[in-house]
Image 1: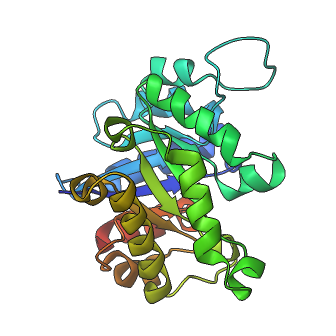
Image 2 (image 1 turned 60 degrees about the vertical axis):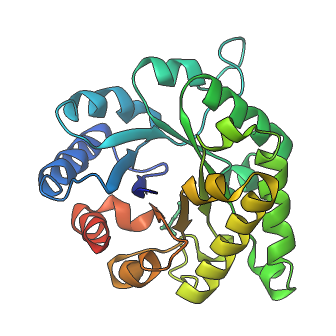
Image 3 (image 1 turned 90 degrees about the vertical axis):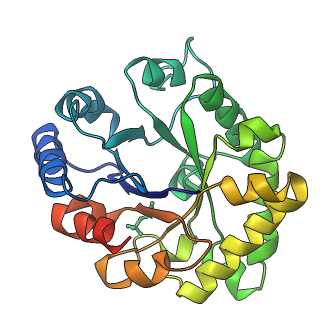
Length: 252
Ligand code: PGA
């Protein structure tokens, strides 16, 4: 059975002290919520990772990184090694967030390499895909998302794809306050699950978690999370405040 995953992507926000404060609050507030059916993940900026890892030692909350390089080491100034992330006990890594695609020119091709590097190091990639507003207005959303999913992931074997979490993040919904309706999100999630079924098989497709991201907040989380193919959320803005993040956790 698929687990729900509620992951807070802090993006480039919070000082070290603010980050420690937020992580401590979340740890304390979700203590009673933790059960076998839900995985809570905090994805802060790199500078927080070690410290928060310490802070969460006795908690079941997991940590993720927002990106990684496709090589384990070398002369790549300013980059972060997937091997180094795995070495300090990080479990998840976001690959292909639309902000990385948009501002850092990350292509499906390079993302496929990052996916390989993450899996080789035992990290669970959270692979993001999603269409822009222009693409949706021109009825291209299925084509674009299919292309991002195929080119980023479909070189993987069945064993490997089972180690990946997907996240549908319509670009027009990220940080805009506009959320995809539960019908729009469910349609895309079931479309992608169908692609996984065609490429691999039913059992594999049913075992993979597909998260929704894009202005998820306490007011809309319950409806989105009750859709049959939505297995959790990748949350930006609402994850920067303990109360709203924990309310989303409680909506599962
Ligand atoms: P948002 O961000 O919740 O602020 O829209 C989601 C994301 O970018 O992962």
